Length: 275
Image 1: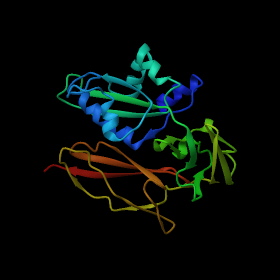
Image 2: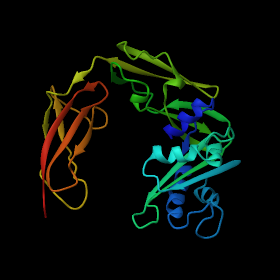
Image 3: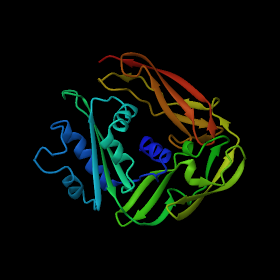
């Protein structure tokens, strides 16, 4: 979605948002095109019947499909270099979009992608998810780096849009303290508050609950307990996890990276044994 909205921004068009029903229809279509690569569904009906089955209403609709591209960047490049697909992505008639992806190791192309677009609608209201709480972010964090979501209400129901800097004003990422960020989208406005703080390094945090794992054919993960200055940090809020060499027997590494007001990383090794 970020790649699509980047292209739309560069062409002077408003970003698209996604509804749960539209996403459901895309999930269905992505699997279907791994069976029959066509805008006609395996049962012989038109692709847009998937929207009706999901309960998604629309006045206009479009579908892009692709197969064989191994990454979002690759499939977007293919679509943007195809006149019909590009026209859907840059259509002023569409307000919502869902994205489908399905991997079929036995399929002819293995990687299958869909985009379904709907429109048009009149926006009723906008708000920021979690706006009732003031969240702290370390100095220098961008709007995109906050991973905030704009919640939109229209006749199609609730849709969601990743918040980007071009929709916002009043934010100074290098100024500490509480700030009010104002949002303007399609003639509607909203705001939320954040607290910009000097980053706190997690490098001296105590990490426990790192366990030896048994390989079962899947990537092995950990659920560490991270404590800094007596406070138990929360995964997803205060830190994120990433891994190295966790898909085979041997020594793997979990990387704990600070998030929000926390910065820095901690690495911990763990063993993966055979069955």
